[in-house]
Image 1: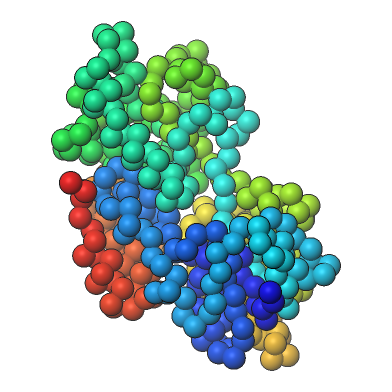
Image 2: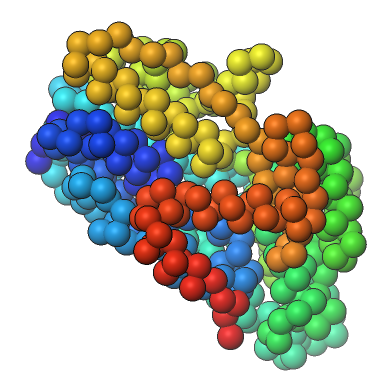
Length: 393
């Protein structure tokens, strides 16, 4: 199998790149390779895991959004950049232009026992966690008195965007839904001095205030050191027994990308200003595999769908320019801020110089999600997607 342009990954970056390049160069043969048959709205996984939204709402079939490009379901297993070929669990695929947009994996930070914890990176993770949460109430009803606290306690390690959003959703689930474990308690542990450490400090402070008001125990400067036999161990010496340990402590390159021995920068693939791999001018990188740096501070910006789609559009324009023999343009990120939900009825957001809280923050987050869905599938998909926004029975 061969393609003019091979896109590895059909997430926010890969899909945006393919659709943009098809608009610019409709005669190109563009092929997306993804391990799933659907485009996953992973920035909303916390809603699906905590019963706020149906899981199906976050799974959009590629047939609805592929925008004139081919899509095949494969798992990438290796790279042969010298021969311009990618290995998969089926046949190898040749290319003239390659885009690496394989996203990221959850990093366990080398902490013993975290392989036993729940994570939240893909739809299957949300489904697995949701299925487990449904066992808490019946498990609590059968538990002996010494076992009850473990059934009632949910521990989340990592106070970044995933941890904060999941803690907020689960707090509302415990307060409102029929299948909650009676007396349920959530502990959110963050290793640094503030929640949302990669975001403006006022967002972290406000998120902590909202979560505590919802009954979440927020522990700062608290490092998870191990998780064994249902016990979470902390650097302070504390231990918490739980049936539900969720790890949201960071991301890393996908294993297959890390194994390719490509140049790295700030724990991601190094590229030039035009998003190309060094020594491989026909290979571009977008999404979580790319470290997007703040032009002013040089620090890595938070991985986000916003930056993934920006880089994807820039890379698509540069491929079109290269094909046409025109000069490439350097990628300059325009980081507009973020909106982080803190439960079903609240959010914190930074839009330019403005910090928004509560319903205004939630409105920004909802608008951003709606705009993206419309951009990939038009008003018809947006209406269908909005109609599916119903809490599960």
